[in-house]
Amino acid sequence: MIRDITIGQYYSADSPVHRLDSRVKIIATLLYIISLFMFDSMAGYAVAIGFFVLVLWLSKVPFAYVVKGLKPIIFMLVFTALLNLFWTPGTAFFSCGVITLTWEGLRKTIFISLRLIFLLLGSSLMTLTTTPNQLTDGLEHLLSPLKVIKVPVHELAMMMSIALRFIPILIEETDKIMKAQAARGADFESGNMLQRLKNMLPIFIPLFVSAIRRAGDLALAMDARCYHGGRGRTKMRPLKYQMTDVAAYAVCALYIIVLMVVVKFCVI
Image (cartoon, rainbow, N blue to C red; front, side, top):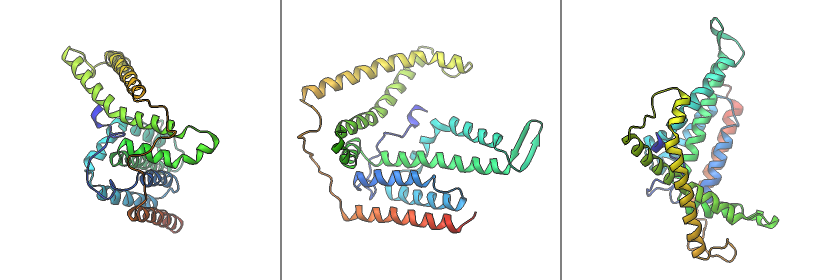
């Protein structure tokens, strides 16, 4: 399950989505996430799902590769769904003792589950088609107006980039530690929840030690290369908008317009 986490990983491919400017992908992802909270109808979700499927097809990222990122949050999805299913008042369609299921609860459960699923899938698709360096440059350009009020934009973008870069590294490190501990007889599956958490200590401790060591090595490497922030630094590949980026903005605007029209005139 550790290797099923897709946030922060990059899938190399030659696709129109990969070639887009990182600023376009960041803004499009934010618009998509915001759009998921703009409606409460099946018609709206149909438009949102259709838009995601279109972008996924253009990105050439395998559907199974993106969907496997849902495995680590299955427990949260099931817990949230059950919570809304059993605790939402309304018109009952099933009742057995203290358990009462309502149509309103079922509808809310479906909508919230879809919202969480496509929120994660949309974020994963952005990181799968954008390298950490491209994300850093895009975030820095988008946040550059904050420099007027003395916000350290470059440093913030660098920290986000380092955090995203460390996710796949720590995932791989965790997988190696778990295999090494399992080879020594460690059991991570049996026992209750408290016992399982206790059994995870042989993983957490060496993982934290490794993460601290890697962070120290990175800090020394940056200091040895005389890194002192973004002031006066130039870019090897400056970001420049192309016609495809303008077309992508137009597609995003069209998606929002269609979504608003569908939500307004469809009652399903």
